[in-house]
Length: 299
Image (cartoon, rainbow, N blue to C red):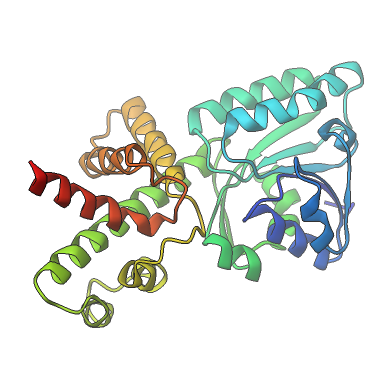
């Protein structure tokens, strides 16, 4: 991108530090967020009153919980483009975890509303709030080669591993695969923790030994201490894992690929939500498993 200007929509736990890193890299950032209070702690970011006021930015990043929220927030923007198309090459960058199928359909809507002048790029992230704060996110993009190369300098202000995975939708499919691994690994670690503790073993000691062997992983390194301490203060709500696993199932069905682990995991995270634990950290899957044990014992 020749112009270091960007719009940003959604300054939540992930979005706020991501936008801050863009600004710190020398970009002019205009942002919209439903709550105004977040702007008080963000230097170098100017606030706009509506998403439509970002219509002239060469790139507009969306970091909202799911695609329906993005579509709703973008409606005024698309209306503005229907009246007066944006500059050719304008990019709508979806960095949330969304459906690979639905984001391609949204791409068609944006293409039509902008008279073909705007493209949608899906570029979801992995790395959690720590990665967002440190600018070390893994970013998996779905875009044409030309669009990816043009947006790469922007994406590299937020992440250290930035890869093009294929055309639109490929980034979201890569993120779905990521969540399949993170969700099932976290669940397995939670099961191991409950089994160990109920057998009289120290969970932290177990995890220390596991980390030195084949079971060691980044998930164990990052989520393990929270699982061991039963610390469920949210760094990312567990309910989003249930949503993301639904994208795995949807994608698998579209190509006829069996996903038995995802099928089991989505049931467990659905149970977690039924227990009212969805707003707590992903590690709360351990509490969901413990609750299942108590329910079984009561019966």
